[in-house]
Image (cartoon, rainbow, N blue to C red; front, side, top):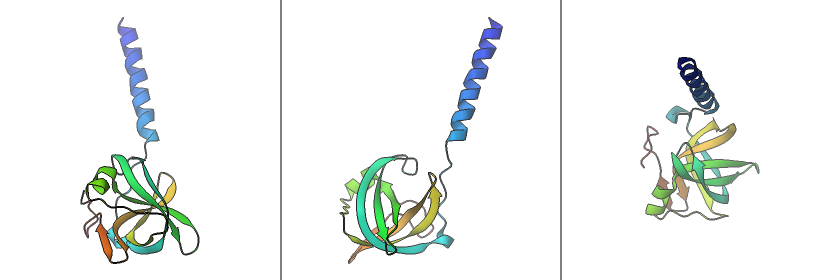
Length: 130
């Protein structure tokens, strides 16, 4: 009986270890690495996102060189409460940090400008305002 309990414990610990190894750490926002990215919205997405700790709002931004990059905005609930909407073709200026997240280049947005509108998602130190 005791051997069976030990075997079960080893299997559980091994499964937890493998699960933890497969999870990537969420990169930190680095204000010193902040840049401005300009482009047009190609797509608006809501998806499960470890950064948002649930469903997050994202835009796919087409940059001047024609490349696409995903911009992480905030949890979808935050975006909906403040009725922030983006549409394909919107011209945006995103202030944020470019990081490698989920094995792809991504921008964590601090601020997004669209025309005269300014949407703030993080404070100057990079802490989320949601």
